[in-house]
Amino acid sequence: MQQYCPLEGFKIFNKPEWIDQKVSDRLAVNYWILGESVVYARPKGFSDLPGVKNAMALNEDVASFVSSGKNPYIQIEDYLFLKGSSSKARKYFIEKINKDNRRKSIIFCNTTLPFNVAIKLAQKFNTTKKYVHVAKNYKDAIGHAKTLSDYVQKPVDPLISNILENYNYNGNSLSPVEIQSEKNWQIKTPEFSNHALVINKNILHSTSTGFLRSNHIPLVDKMRYQCLSDLPENSSLDYIIINGGELKGTSRSARFKFMQSLKEWHKKFPFQMYITYNANIFTRTAFHIAGTVMPFKLRVAQNLKHALKLVHDDQKKSLPIEIKETKAAPIDQRDIENLLAMIGNMNWEVEGFENSFKISEDHPFFYVYQSIKLIKEELDDLFADRTRLEAQLQQSQKMESIGTLSGGIAHDFNNIMGIILGNTELALEDVPESNPSYKYLSEIKKASLRASNIVKQLLSFSRKTHHKPQIIQIATHIKDSLKFLRSTIPTLINIEQNILISDETILADPIQINQIVMNLCLNASHAMEQTGGTLTLSIEKVILDDHSVKDYSGLKSGDHVKIMIGDTGPGIDPKFIDKIFDPYFTTKEIGKGSGMGLAVVHGIVKNHNGAISVESSPGKGCKFNILFPMTK
Image (tube, rainbow, N blue to C red; front, side, top):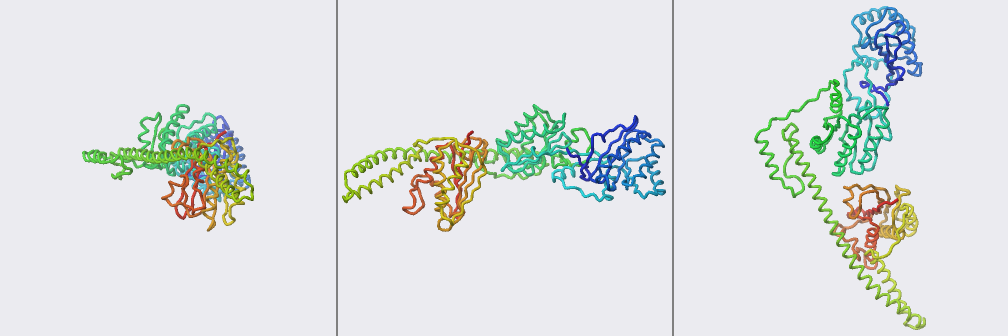
């Protein structure tokens, strides 16, 4: 755990044997090294001769750690807790000071008036050329020391700098701020990240960025446990401060799970207060509502300085920070009438707001208005989910109906083609090749085989074919498919791979997975065969929570493998986007496509309990996203 000076941001170094070290029966001393050139001493008690001798010996040991024990240094003597000294002790102290060539400057602070007079008199007879200064308190002393030192402050984490800048206190004497931050506390995902550190062994501060979903909550829980386990023994996280200024939003399920996780944490490790600052009005309103049911204090602060003041006030410590308190205006009849009119005129079945919510925070009904707005936004999200699910259901029912119809037709057609093909092959055995009919029968056989292949595609689309699933490493399998594709795709088309997984597995038929890749990649190459372009294939692991899984019909929350195949071709016309998976639908010229490729892909994906979606717009290419549930 690193200590810092809250005034100048200097890193502080000390050793346990330098703190509250009893050097005599009447004197104890404390030493800290500030930055790279300042020794700060704070004696406590009465300076007798044995105590000063031992203290000066310890002072030399401390000074050996400053600038590698070679360069000059500045000494600050803080006498806030010194009750007095003997004449022999003072004389010995002055002698040792004068003989120390490295101690070029000495600054006294929190001294008595007689001591100040004595210092000023001694300065007139100073023959050692040492610089001596008397400061009012530690704040003045460290500020003066900074002007005397060539010390260049080492860069620190911007978040730590921000905490130190806002950690104001009276400055009478040094009170180091302890800040600890470990790599294993940090959370970093594509959607959400969190930077955590602990202040003074009992304040957990987090800065969250991105979008919080329910699958991130276990990561936040793990972070808290890791922080607590890494702190010194008997530490406790009594306060949790969250900077929500960079958080873009949260899902409904994430908000619920987050509050539940805080309750569970409080049961195991009771804490005093949870504070958020820089939060948007949405979060602030939610906190005001939740504050009535939580077993701990929930507070909304204006900024970091205000948040630290709330902590210090709760600890019953004085922190002289002026925060302008806002007082609510008195409620009159017009306020009540306006609120009732707004509620009565609100159209709860139409998305958005027809009413204005722009009122000042000192309005008596500010949080009432914001609570209503919050509820309306939640309902809008639910209506949007319902509309999306209805569209997915209609599409699913349509595809299911087409699949059932195609399967029935395919079976009947397959029986007919079996008879035609069988009799044709029998006739070919009886007819010699010299007979003109042999040529006609051969054409019938070729056409029958092509028709049989179409039947297989129909059965694959309708999911009536038998497949043999097995556990496969999807990345390895697709890499093998791409090696074959390179030889079949024109050289004017560049292939880019972005495979972010290695040994993740899915349960699938490897032949059918290969068929998906081949169909989509060949479609992409056909779209770019005239102009050239880039075919992109990426594979990554994604985690779908209860909210995000709603975007994919038929999937369950959990770990999935996402395959993306995209091109830089002309794209798909928006009026055709809902029809591309229908059997025999194609925008290609006659003779260049059967219209079954994407229908077969759709059937295979659904048969593997996956989901497929398409993103496209004219002139901007096309992307197919396929998700398969992972398996162990």
